[in-house]
Amino acid sequence: MHVVPFTETECVHWILSETDKEYTLISLYNTMVELEERIEDAKPRKSSIEMGAITLDNVYKILQNFEKLYAIMNAKESH
Image (cartoon, rainbow, N blue to C red; front, side, top):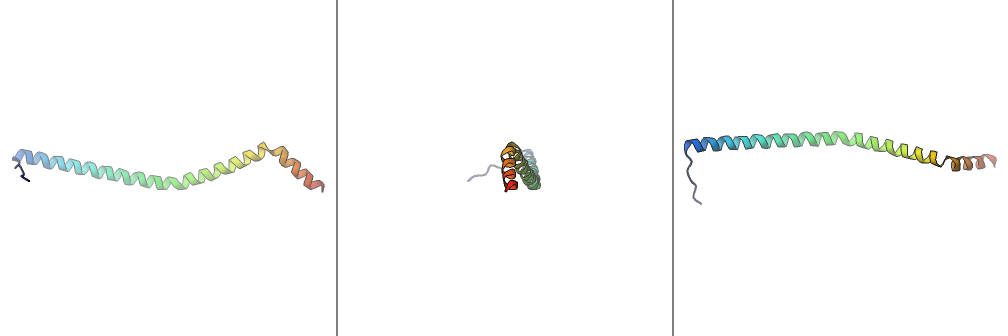
C-alpha cells in the first residue's frame, strides 16, 4: 500500500480532524455511561411503581366484586 505524503497544512488539518473525532467519541461514551446509570437508578423506582399499581388493581377488583364478597362474608357469619 502506497501512502501519499501530506503537506504540513494537510497534516495539521488531519490532526485537528482526528482530535475532534476523538472528543466527539469521548463525549458520546460519556453520554452513554450517564444514560446507563440513569436507567439503573430508575429500575427500582419502576418496580416500586409497578408493585403499587398491582395493589391498586387488586383493590379495584375487590371493589368491583364487593357484593359477591359481602355475600360470602355474610354466609360464613351466619354458620
